[in-house]
Length: 338
Image 1: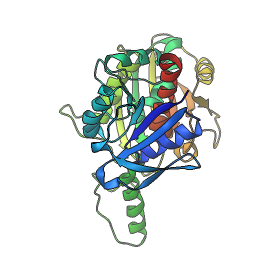
Image 2: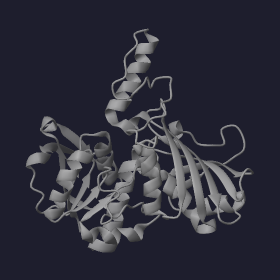
Image 3: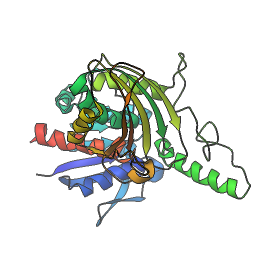
């Protein structure tokens, strides 16, 4: 059985990756529609190796008959059109921030809390978490099951693609301009991104944290356990694709490095590459285009009782966005729509 589907925001970096991922994984789509803003109407996007989809105007599209919609157009647009698609009968998997903390909308990482998908019936919307949260949840889940996490301190190293095509373009153009001695002022980022790091992702809040940092803490509580305390420092780095995280964890019970390594290796979606030698770890350059969440540098933290530190890397456009959304759709079809 195939499904009548639509991808909203199909011309963006995540939308294109969603279409690619659906095709690669052989998702049962009988009919696929690509939707974007009026300025993209008439352009085309690829769906698999042999299909080219003409882009339709989101504002004029009638969602009646669509069964599954994967949406990644930006939070303000999603706030209007995801409920419209849901009202027309579709189940919407929304990749924006707008619905994530809505108590009637499940926030799902399929390897972590697939049972939450059942809550889609309240609003016919399922939220895809923030990219930096997704890879962290996949890594924390088996460790939490083993020894119960009390507190997490995480510093992120987030790629320019987290700010979309404009972010990647700015990194490229600034890098080129520096080499030819023609400095290019920042437009997408608040400061120069080329050959620099920026401790600022998303808007600042009154307490001094950024919204990205707040998202990681709030989404962890909703997805994994409301008792977990998490503090984050989110940093933009001059990398095109791939987010990295330095993670420090304090547990309720003792946990050894070997126990952690064994639990992580058994977790679906994780690849453990942890050799205490040169090149014995994974970097963003190596994870680009890959589905897995990679965990390296697993070690005991001797400064706290029951502490571990580790390094987590993943392709933010794949697992951090498109793949997670497609995996939600796969579980939705398997467990709820058949």
